Structures are given as C-alpha cells and as structure tokens.
Image 1 (cartoon, rainbow, N blue to C red):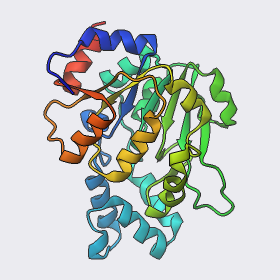
Image 2 (cartoon, rainbow, N blue to C red):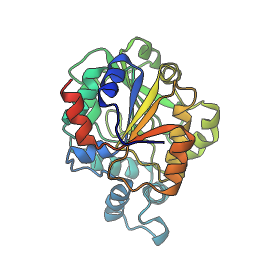
Image 3 (spheres, one colour):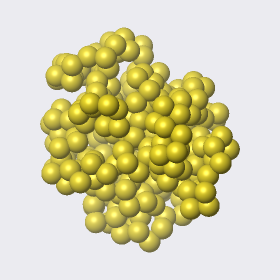
Image 4 (cartoon, rainbow, N blue to C red):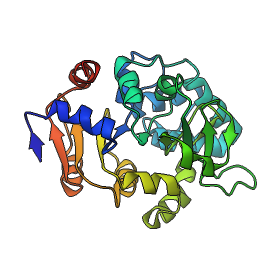
Amino acid sequence: MFDAAPPAEGIAERLRAGSLMPYLGPGLAELAAATVPTTHEELAAFLGARVALPKRARGNCWAAAQYIETNRHRTTLDKLMAAAYAPPVEPTVLHRALAAAAPPLIVDTWYDGGMRAALSGQTDWGEIQGSSRAGIGESRWYRAWNAADEECPVAEAEAWRTLLYKPHGAAAPGRNVLIADSDYVEVMTEIDIQTPLPDEVKRRRAGGGFLFLGCRFNDQMLRAYARQIMKRSGGGHLALVAGVALTRNERRFLDEMEVTLLDMDLAALTGVLSAQ
C-alpha cells in the first residue's frame, strides 16, 4: 500500500494519543551524523577492520561476529561492540520530538544510545533489552534498566509511561547485545511462540500500530523479528520510504503486514513533529 500524500498531522496526533508507536532502525543514527556504524554493512566493516576474517564472514555483521566469538572468545566480541558504539549519538530533533510525544512503546532496533539520551530528561520511562544467552549460566531472554541507568526487575516496566524496547540489545548500559549467529539460534527457535518478547511489550503493542523510521527489512532475520513484534498489535502501521529503493522481499513483507508506505523522509517528519 502506498500513500503519496501522508496525513502528517495525523501522525503527530496518533503518537501523542499512543495509537502509533515508533519502530526505529539505524537510519536515525545516520540522521544524527553519528560516528558509530549506522548500517549492518558498516558494522561488518568495523569488525573486519579489527579482526582478520575469512572470506565467508566478510561483509556480513552476523557471520563476522560469530567468527570472532568462536575464534577470539565472546569477551573480545563484546569489547569490539562496546568500542563501535562508545561515541555518544547526540539526539536529533526527531529523537527529541518522539520522546516528547511519550508514546507507550518505542522499539529501537539499533545498538546506539541516541533514543535513550533523548528520553533522559524524563523520569517515567525505562528500557528493556533483548539479552544474549551466551554468558555462563545465562537464562534470561531480556533485561531491564530504569531511567537512572540502574538494572532493575522487568516487572517495574508496568509503571513506566514510555517503554524503550531494544530487541537486539544495546552497547550501553550493560554491554548487552545480540549480534552473533549463535545469539539468534534460540531466539529464532522460540520467537514464533513469542517467548523472547517481554510481556509488557506484548501488552502495549495491542494499543495501536507501528511507525517505521530508518528501518530496512532486507534480511530474513530482520523481517522475522518485526513480524513477531507486530503480531497481535492494533494495526494501522506506517513506514517512511521516500528515497529508499526497497527490495522485492521488503515490498512483499510490508504488503503482507499491511503497512502503508508514506512518501516522506525523516527530515520532513522532523519538520511536522517539531511544528506541533
């Protein structure tokens, strides 16, 4: 579905009403002119510049990470990911506008802290991160941090006005990321029955649809994650796609999930939201 004349004011109203929830990709870090990797390809290049990779792992961040974990230990991989995202990402006007709208749920699929920094002036929010189960004795699917950067019980999320959900983890706080192929083995086995998703995410998504910003779905794993996060949501999904050359698989996925495509870019949306 494609809407060449998006209802811009309606986006702002739905965000404030909680019936539209941002689903963010690495495009927002790119918009911030961040010095961290802002695509999966850039992340693969970052890892490959620090560890000599076999040909089969070059250019693919998940395969590169798996090679590093297998041959150089998990601690090496975690240190490299922390280094990749150590430079702070200054929140853009769009980050801050989304934070000010205070939707019940913000899904952020990249590893940087730009959205967390935008929320930092508030107190009634917190973050849940998907957790790697690679650690010795690790059995949790996810972990939670409050607005003070303190790890806390996941149950505290019930009281937060805004829940920031990082399904692939984040470099900080906690240095907790899903990146290697092995990180996703158990997740992909269980995700169809929703086990790796926090209950509070499931509850909040029922109230509306998702607004996809700076996202690509040109990999099967990314599509699988999005499909399961969207499952049983309230519908009315929108995606900004101006200037994006979507692949056939991406178009098929967005059509399957009944996502309306908007001929609008991130800069235009920033102007709309900052004017409200």
